[in-house]
Length: 350
Image 1: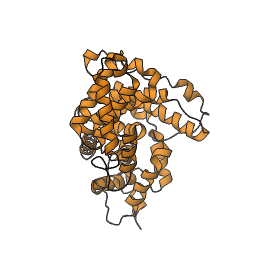
Image 2: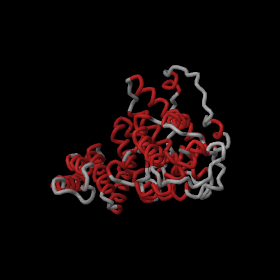
Image 3: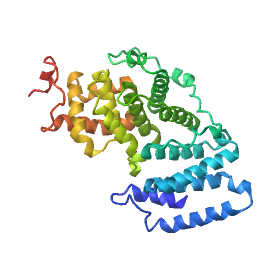
Image 4: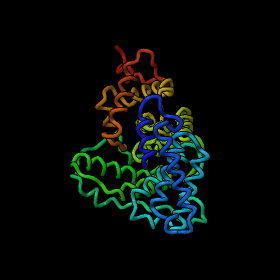
């Protein structure tokens, strides 16, 4: 759609994030007019077509980016109605790219406002949560590695809630597949991307844990990390306000949680590259530094190794993570929030 494309280019330019730009406005008005005309017809084929769904999705996404929450919610609910009248999500499998964008809008709205996603939620829609994809064949394409890590995530998976552990495992496997595809110059299908995103993110928004618990911290951290992999709305100015606030609160009250410094370091970095902004530096960098000391991380290569041992996609995350790492260790005003052990404190003495 012309107006959403125009808004995209306006949005990525500094100072142009807010209301519909003058250049996009005529296209926006024309799109609304054509959509209303199409929906007013006594023609279900036209009203429920991919073209109509794409138009509604474009308007919903635009409303979300311009913080028009009421309009975004209205149009996402309209999308859900169109999908339901078509026979459900399964009927869009031949239009996987469109379905992907529809679900991205729905998930972006949920993480921005804290509302429940519209899809796969209301029992009346009779839409079961999407099954996890079988990534076995894709994983077998990788060459076996003999490397081992002291940060092996399998150590803590056994203590994690079963649903959360399964989501972690699938997303971790997906990251491995993506890293292999990048290294080998191959691509994955839209369907694999869609199935992983939907199965992982909708489950993570569906389950709930005790506030302040380690499982809740992991759920929120995993959701934030998934945003950077699947949604990437943040680059267009959508801050995922509700998720960001919840994760910030959880991470700043982790002193009593049974989370290792290595895992906490991954959670902090996952938040840094996914949802946090410059305003979070005042608490984020001291926490990063304290846990870097405890983990004996004194170089980017060591940090990178730790992050990769949990789950990580270098092409997506390395640049912003390294920037955060460098600025954390370079700032003379930052002091750890927790005292390191005597054996590791020398790492940061000059």
